[in-house]
Length: 92
Image 1 (cartoon, rainbow, N blue to C red):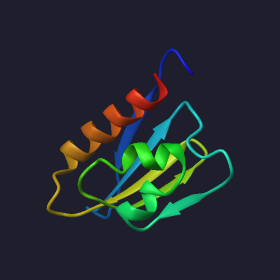
Image 2 (cartoon, rainbow, N blue to C red):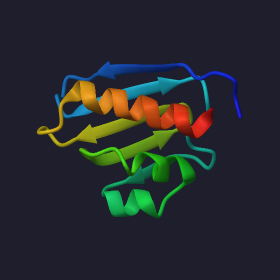
Image 3 (cartoon, rainbow, N blue to C red):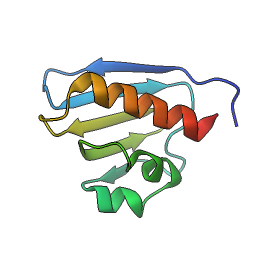
Image 4 (cartoon, rainbow, N blue to C red):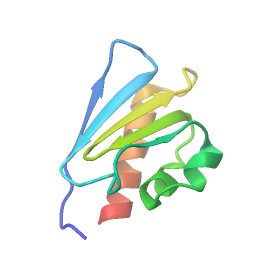
């Protein structure tokens, strides 16, 4: 495990989409896509760690980049904070 993780969140033109960039590999085997919490719970270890973040409708992992599509009822800043915390807990 790494001693640190860098996480940068970027809002896209679509208000439901948040793009995260990290210094660590999120997807070892190529692109991973999950279209439900149930799929995330059955997916890779990183997807499973993120399945507990309420409000995620779709998750895409690609190397060191992650795209989250959120339920518009879930506040953006809460999703960013919870995804960042989940990644830190997972990697650190």
